[in-house]
Length: 158
Image 1 (cartoon, rainbow, N blue to C red):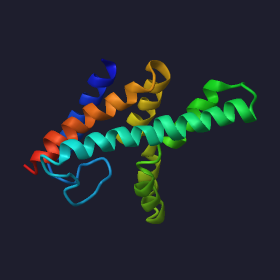
Image 2 (cartoon, rainbow, N blue to C red; image 1 turned 45 degrees about the vertical axis):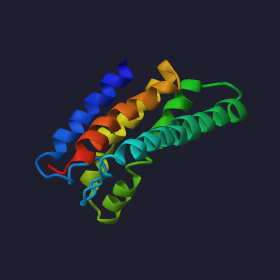
Image 3 (tube, rainbow, N blue to C red; image 1 turned 30 degrees about the vertical axis):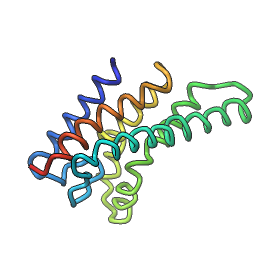
């Protein structure tokens, strides 16, 4: 239930950020309309949400944490390892924009990276995985994509 509610809340926040200038307030700051139109948005973003979460949370995060925690650190310091890897994995989606800001020497934008909603929600999804198991980040992403990509994006621009 927490995953559904927080995913929907993030979807609403993202939509509200985008409404003043449709297509420009999306989390990745893409200037074109970044959504697949309805009805293709339903299977596209359903697959995308599941694939992204398997790749990031269940793939990268779990495998790297397991390797570092078990193989390298011999089952010590699980929580510090988890949160360090989670912070790195959470950068995946915003890394291109962050690297662009670095290249442009826009240091204020780089400094804002840890408080950007997309980065924060990626960290939060790691916590969901840790607290509630592997289904919860997938449910979070599905409820976010339902509002942001399928309903708003798939039926827009407004």
